[in-house]
Length: 239
Image (tube, rainbow, N blue to C red):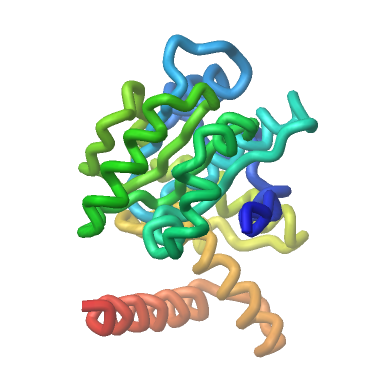
């Protein structure tokens, strides 16, 4: 049961401080994250908040990967909060309610924390974590409050310049070029998160291969409009 929490979590190999975009708006957040990963801090619980898709999990995984490089004798503990909250009680007794188990880890990362109606679980979970010496990270949306978090990083939406870098890095990795007009158009999508920017670029690249054509601005606009409609439909269904 204990080994159900594998270290082969999503984005393990790709998340690092070098590919976390932080030119201006999130530079202080990145510095705090690096300090938490590399140094002995006066606190052991770090909160990372952001709007959805703007890098909280990426930054948390970058910290985790850096800590794991320092000590390969210990395994990190990584889980979404939802998974913990819906586990059966016998699994939780062996893991998240087990002080010795949690203290044996190199880092504890609880991803996507939210306000659960299961107050018995939450209260006991925090009571256990208060006595843990291992470094702990929570990621969550802006506005959430976690009682044991003493130091918090707030990630903001990417600036236009940051969006341009995200796009250019993706194009470089795929060995494909976009015109400046297309790059400007995508980076001008004000409400797009990092994840949505990456999703649009990947969608354009995939569609251009299928259609066997080089993307132009009208081609990109058409795909973007379809994505906007699909996202709107998904939000309606989610409600």
